[in-house]
Length: 141
Image 1: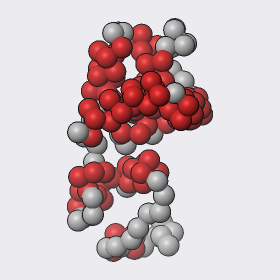
Image 2 (image 1 turned 135 degrees about the vertical axis):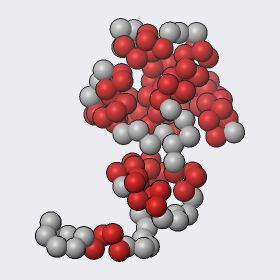
Image 3 (image 1 turned 180 degrees about the vertical axis):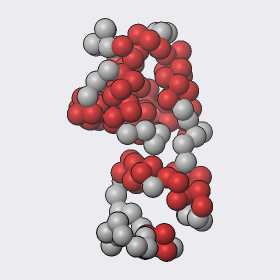
């Protein structure tokens, strides 16, 4: 354990693992991202951000024929595309709730609640599952 004095032993760590889901692992690795670049890590390409926030917002805005600003500003609270965008940013990028919330003018807990709401809708609605499947094909394909 590093106590702030003397040598930082974490610099000598050469192996380890993180238990959790993809989102948790991405967020954790984002916190230690600079170490990813200087060491060989399994699945490094999968963990590095491939999509920017603007890429995903543009994709969803185009699909739903809305302006990116309308997608983010929250004036139209019931805009389904807004929920899909928040869900996609959390699921497919390394952005944390704080960064996503700042873009959508919502709190970190608001981001979590919105993602959970979208996940519930995915379970119940075939059309929503189709939208997520389309999004997955665009971002992972």
